[in-house]
Length: 419
Ligand SMILES: CC(=O)N[C@H]1[C@@H](OP(=O)(O)OP(=O)(O)OC[C@H]2O[C@@H](n3ccc(=O)[nH]c3=O)[C@H](O)[C@@H]2O)O[C@H](CO)[C@@H](O)[C@@H]1O
Ligand SMILES: C=C(OP(=O)(O)O)C(=O)O
Image (cartoon, rainbow, N blue to C red):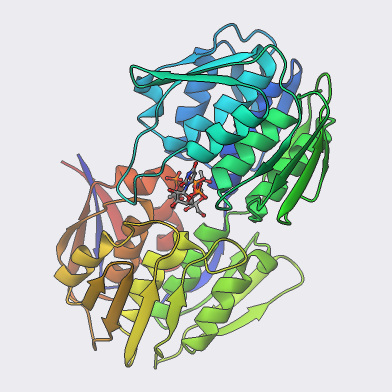
């Protein structure tokens, strides 16, 4: 078992480069199943989730190669299997994103139900509603979803909630359907736009990605394409909060600052100074006094749920009382108990957390309960007096590329220990 150890650290200073976005690369890798030609994906982050998805694609016959350190070459010409076992879907919920491409390309997909996780039950009803609207016949038995369709047919699909995964899965399936598909109340996240841009390079006809209505004109086939994944706004945001918490001064390279506007607005309310630069970098200067604020998580362009835990760590040492409302996932406050062990004063009531800022946190033995909870504990550890020992760090490795190295380059005292 590995642990991450964080010592109380000096203020973060220096420059750090953000990797490609986990939530963009995963659907993009899944989309490679839609073509018989080779696809090249650049700016691929070094993450456990990417490895698991590549393993899944290989298991169904795709030829997946790591061409360079951050480049993948994927050729799905010879895929010969539509069966995705539980041993792979249990490792990562996003593996369900291969359902749309497999159904569209093979006419069948049999995938183990991904199940819930720490942050909520995370049903897939909206994905299935979309596939059914496209004409798929879906049977659920023995924990598997078996979907069949000789040829998907375009249709209008209204999503009851702008689900990121459902939008992506239906969008991918619709690129090879017959006729036009319209997705209404679609998710508008930057990662949806990145996926759509990749699909368009593959020859798909898509209008409206990044708005709440996406129109797709189905094609007979898609070709191979080369694409560079967008920067990870959540990784960038995590380092931005780190600078604010440690009263540091850092420059983050390889960002699209527009994607960070919901976070920038909130960080400014806590007093941090932020300079956006034309060259794709952003400077964050933390101030001695961290001010309180309120946060409500929402689908994009609202405040991202994936930054809620890290912001809660910051607000734990702000002056005054802050309120955080989590509206996207029903159980995304698992980090509260761990932050409390470090001296944070947080009370929760259903989806609402009330944070009374304390003067300082103290190091403790804590566990990462999910990916962003783990990131919040790393940030809290940077400012806590003494040593913080974080268990269950495989959650952190799912979504942060070389987190200790990157933080160490900014002056943090953080390392990994094998036991
Ligand atoms: C790999 C990836 O991109 N993960 C992101 C994606 O997850 P994911 O795509 O799983 O998130 P969704 O947007 O689908 O989920 C949002 C809400 O909708 C609900 N829901 C979703 C689908 C469905 O069929 N039925 C249903 O009820 C979920 O339970 C949740 O409460 O978007 C989330 C919300 O921004 C982020 O936190 C995740 O980091
Ligand atoms: C919840 C997250 O990811 P996933 O959907 O892959 O679990 C996340 O990135 O914070």
